[in-house]
Length: 402
Image 1 (cartoon, helix red, strand yellow):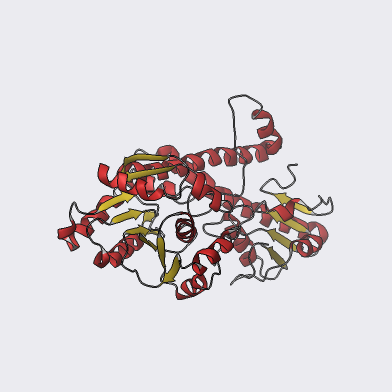
Image 2 (cartoon, helix red, strand yellow):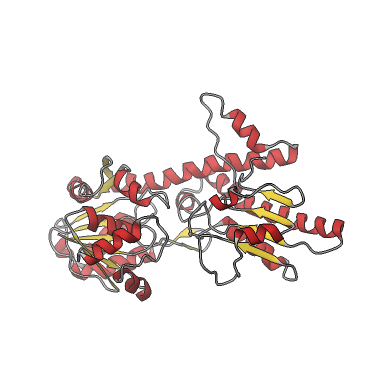
């Protein structure tokens, strides 16, 4: 069997590798970025994901996976491309459509077509209509389904194999066909449903997380105003057997939790009230953090009659990864950097080698030099630092839990 994965990003590439490694399938990975294609064919991972590069090298060497800038004739096609926004948080499915149109000429009777990209409800049906309008002879002769990913960056190898998956076809036959493919490498339970429910399930999972995080972030704002240690408060509240409050941070980032709720609010603005409010709270938290850092800088300067050295600790949207997409940490660091151009602003992100805007500083150097330190991401190296009473420390992510 041959499978074609359209998109070799944070989800498409690992899924293609896992399918090639554990499935009875030869995989073509397609990406419009020729550098990504070249690196993949050389066995080099263009993202950071523990253990994945060794697996990539195995499947490339064995001939089970190769990358290309164009699709190839296959038996199964998987759309794993971004779904960004346009306008005021309106989902843009143009990448999904472009990838779909790219594979339409290759489709034949009996083929499987699956969308994994996070999509608004109804997207699979829209793509079905595009396919059948272009190739009417394929109507009722190919299988079309939606199967969202649900993995945690940094633990993708385990989760792609062991997590349950929700698979929804445009009909029962399509669902069964998709389950047949995923069962080759997924050990978790494969839950059958219809395409619309599968699409909404993905959006619901991340919207639920966003609402829960918003509650924690709102608590942090209240506690700051009330002079209460939010970390202690949450720890004590969670002693209740039926309470499980998450930890606050400087916002919400990544291309899932910070994005997916808008797919619901854009389609159902009158119904999605709590979801919309949670988005506003989590977006505001990053702006609040910016103001706290600005005030700390100005207060230090006023008190000490000199400009402080400032360290912004972390750019990634969550601990121990290199992913900066939708990152509130990057947003905060950028705002401070741009507003204090005449100051020494040290930017720390241990999981990337370089950045197009910032010169990066090592963790130890930045912490030792800085007068004002803002912890934005709870990377493990930061937790090895000792609290310093001589510094102004803004711990937005619970490094010290003080």
